[in-house]
Amino acid sequence: MRCECGSPLPSPTSYCLSCGRVHTLACGVYIGKKVYLVAIGKVVETQSFEIYDEEESIRNLFEILAERIHERRVGEVYVSGEDESKIKFGFENVRRYALSDLRVYATQPLPFNEFVSKLREFVTRKKELRKVDIPPEEKIQGAHTTIIGGRLGREFLYKVALCEYVKKIVPGVITGGASSLGGGVRFKVTRCDERGNIRALLIDGSSVQEIHIVTTAKNKEQGEVILKMLKSVSSS
Image 1: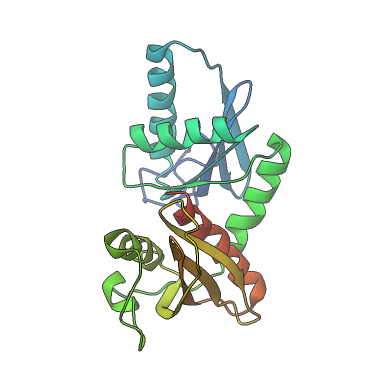
Image 2: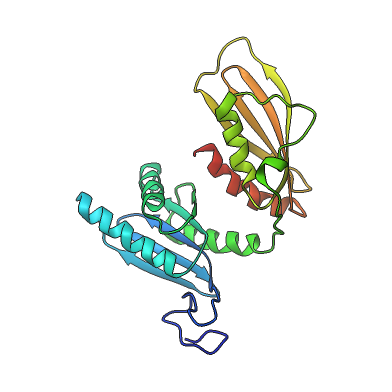
């Protein structure tokens, strides 16, 4: 296998040390009976690793995964697994041992083959999205200057603003119920419209604030891709 510059590559998804070309769009980590590393590029490359219960073995495993991910110079890793507990385990360890400033996203539980198929479709569509270079703090705008949830509420919106496909965040009206919903401060993306913009809710006890997120998406299909990315903010 050779890079477009003619230099040999260890694999089709390897980073080229000669010209600096990245051949991987994103990586996936799947936790099942084994741990799988999936690299999505022009081809899909999969590596499997045995997993053991010992703390030292777990550390060694995720250090190796971190090295493999770093070798491909990707900025994003998507974590899935057979169930929620395995996804949480993978998500926490991928972030803990990362060798660069990775964006790590947790997905829903899926069979392995379905995860690979959906990940490939997702990152291919994501490649078509336009990025914006706007400081996160300048994206939060609108007539409603109050943001419920105090510091935590603002942290949720700041995390949304870090997304390079978000152009503007507009806090909306605040409504309140008669009784507390409990659960502390929460953020939930709900749907996207036909233009690809996203509606979300910021929740603090019995108070609920609508959040309107303006994206670079051209249509609902592209907006759904961004919505999936922002869902990770709800669980962060």
